[in-house]
Structures are given as structure tokens and as C-alpha cells.
Image (cartoon, rainbow over the protein chains, first blue to last red):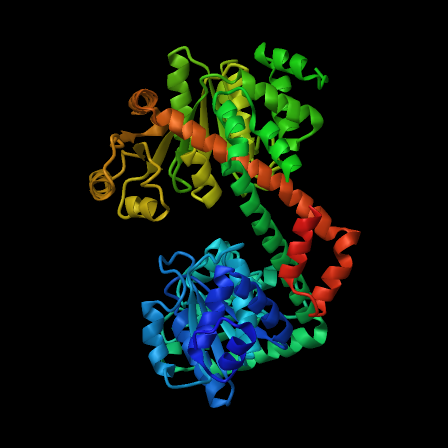
Length: 314
Length: 314
């Protein structure tokens, strides 16, 4: 279907047309006129979205764990989507090779959708593009969306943190929990998973995590620490149980609502700033300011004076 | 001197009044009315500033190396200032403990000034505050300014990269050069220093650096690789020679001018964006948008629509 008519595209995607779904996400990322309308439609149709963020050091097995969690959801008869976030990838949107391979597991399964997001999107970067993509997936019928990051870069941690429930994945062995702590992952974890738990060092890692949790500010929810061997699907059921328990806790305690509001406030602020940034760059690159910039380069006019002029000009 | 009268403050600082100099930098960081004027004055008075960035992994010995480079400058009868950048420090401006200790070496020396910058500054963060502080130092009579970062975080690398000459410090031993490469330091180095060169592994590190340089885009300047034992001052003379050689090359080839212009353009853009960001946050937090934000939280109004309204309102 080559239409860009928003309502038609949505109807097709909801009926399982994967090309239409991919097209919606791409149009929103690119920020065309149709994209803006699709974004608005997704917002009004995305009820009860539930996002699960997965983060942790590269190599911790996040993709494998995500796959096994999706399998648990499918066994329970529920649909699930995956957004794989890789800000460092040179690929711009669409599925990258790794995901094509992974998708083969679910290629014939209409209940699973996997998409990589490497592009910055047209506005505000991945931290705006990801919640928009999640809403689109929710609006076309995926109530649960796993948001999996490749590493623990600032953007990735931010994205994982802003999910409804955040899983932090570590591996057994000396220092991995300490590294997670250094990367700022202790504060954002709702559920800890020690993946590759068939390797030595599980007890030490658990002890490190427990003692770091003991030292942190006590809250009404203490993140449980689970063990998985994701490659064999071992422990995946228990992770889903823990995720659902956190979800229920967050909904009943009001935490979920507060997170949703904080997330929307940030998204709005990022969007507005990104839109204005674009205007600033256009103005600074244009005719009007070229003389002022030449004066600045010659040392006769300072950046603050020009910045003030630009603000007035806006 | 408790005056905030810009011309008086500048005159005092130029006469060696350290309290006046510290006050100028603080006023500019805080962004008061006087600060803006001081910033403008510094811009028009800072001729021939030469900034040397030092970056590298924590523990590589950057502070010790900076100290030994300052000593070389002093032996040559030249004044030098140091800006020590630590974005992760909880201290807000002024000298931190480590620098108080370091400063004792030079406490009675009017030709040396060391200042830590941990604060984000009022506008645009450290990447705006640091060039402003460097200009102030140049304007009051420090022609050479060492800008030393604590780690290889994104902001720190950016700041070191925007110096006139950038030194990347590594240590001997397996993988240190590879780590530098991963942190994006290969592209920004004008001079490599293998510090702690009395330890084993110097040859391997040099070989790794050479082969990574061989693989990178060849330019008119190939970064030399020097060896130091900064604690004993060994090799510091040669590093200063290499820095001066790069400086001369950059000035004669036009590179220095291009870097200066690119740096100013970035600074201007950051300043303008930061000023507007503040306006956006104020508007979003105010009365005018509270109803719209409540509508958004209730799912009836999407972020894009509100962002568009805000842009119009600006």
C-alpha cells in the first residue's frame, strides 16, 4: 500500500500490514506533514501502552534476553514489539542485519514486530523518536513494547530510564555490578537480571547488587534480582513475572502516572527546543547574520551580542 | 577589591590581583549584568590566546603532566594558566581540594594561575564557560592556557578538541591506545604523550598508536608521539617543543584561523540555544501552558501541537 493517507495507513497497519506499519514509523521519523498527522493520531489512539526498557553493558546479552521475553509473551498469547536502539549505528532507520537474523525467529508470527532505531529522527533525536514509535506500535495493537539498548551511553540510559519498567542486565563476575553502578544504572533499575547465570560469580554479583541496593535511598519498591540463561530461555518466565509485578505496583501506587507525566513533559520540552534549534541554525546560517559573524571572527563583535540580536529577531 | 565595575576589575586583575581575576570569572559564569559586560570586554581584549587541551583516561597523569608543562613555561620566562575541567565534580566553581594542593607549587608565583571549573555555568554549560574563562585569562595577561580534563566524557573531549592544540595522554601497556581510539581521541590528537614511560609496554603502545595513525585519514600534520615521566618532569621540554611546533604549523597553514572560527560559531550557536532553552522552560512552566499540559497528560492534546503553539508564542 503506497498511500500516505494517515487513516488508511493506520487501518492497514492495524490489520497486520507490516509495510504500512514500517511506513508510519518512517514518516513520523522524517517529520513530513503526513508524519505529524500520524504522530497525532498515534497519540490519541495509544491507550495503555506498556514499555519495558532493557539496558546494560554491551555483550550482557540484552538482545537474547529480549528474545526470550518475547517468547514468554507469545506463549501467553500476547503480542509484543521490540524497539532496538542503537544510536551509534551508521544505518538510518529500518532493520539492521542483526535484527533481520533475529526476526527470522518470528518472521511468520504476526504477533511480533521488531524494529531497529539508529536514526536521530528529524527532531530532538532518539529520545523523542522512541516514545513516538512506541505510541505508534501501541496504537496499532502492540500493548507491550520492549525497548532494548545496545550500550549504556547517555542517550540509551535516558531512553531505558523513561520506560514504564526498566530492566538492568548484568553478568556474573567480579566488578560487573560495580560497573553498572558507575554507569548510573542502580538508580534506574526496577528489575535486575543476572544473565549468563550458568557462569561462575553469580553469588558475588548478587551480593554486590544487594549491598548497593542497601546503601541507596530506600523506596517503596526494592528491585528484585533475577537470574537467567537467556540463550536457553531459562528464567525468562520469572523475569516477565517480576516485570508484571512492578507494572502492577506502579499502576496502583500512582508511580506509573507520575512517570508518564514526567516523560511527556520531557518529550514536549525536547520537541520545542529541537524545533527552535532548527530555527536558530537556519537564522545563523543565513544572509542576515553573515556580516555579524564575520565581525565576530574579526574579533570586533562578541558571541553574546550576536546571540542577543538573534533572540530579538526570533 | 569588592567593586564590580568591569574596567576597574580588569585593571586590578591585570596588575596581578588574583581575587579580582577570580571574581571576573565567577561573575561571567553566573551571568549577571556585570558578567555580560566583562565577557564582552574580555572578548575585545583577548588577542593571541593560545589554548592547549589535555585529555585522556582518568589516572593517565594529566594533572602531573600539566604541572610539568607549566614548569617548562616558567623556566622559559612565560606566564601560564590552567583550567581544570571536571564536569562530574560536585563543587561549584572555584578551586577544589586537589588544585589547592597543586597550587601550592605555584602559590607565590604570579606567573601561574590555576582554576577548576566544575560548574555548568549559567548558560550553555562548560563548553561555553570554558572558552569564556580562557578569554578572560588571555585578556588579563596569560597568553598560554592549558585546559586539562579529568576524564574522557563527551563534554570533556569536546572541550579538549576545541583547543588550539590538543594533547592526548595515554599510558604504556596493552590496550591503552585501543581505548583512546574507542573514546574518539585519535581524531582529535595533535600531539600524543605516552606518560609513565618508565613502565613496561611503551614500545607496544607506540606501535599501536603508529598503526592507528597509519590507518586514519592522512593530513598535512601527523601527530608526533612523545614519552614522558611527568612526575620527574622528564620529557616535558620535548612536549612543549611539539606543542609549539604544532602551533606554528597551525598558524602558518591557516588551520588555527579555521579552528578559531569553527569554535566561535559553535559557541555562538550554543549560547543562542541556551538562552532560548531558558525561555522555553520558563514558558512551559508558566501559567499560560498549564492547561495545555494538563490536556496532554489526559491524552487529549499531543506534544507536537503544544510545541507548535509555544513556537508561535515565542
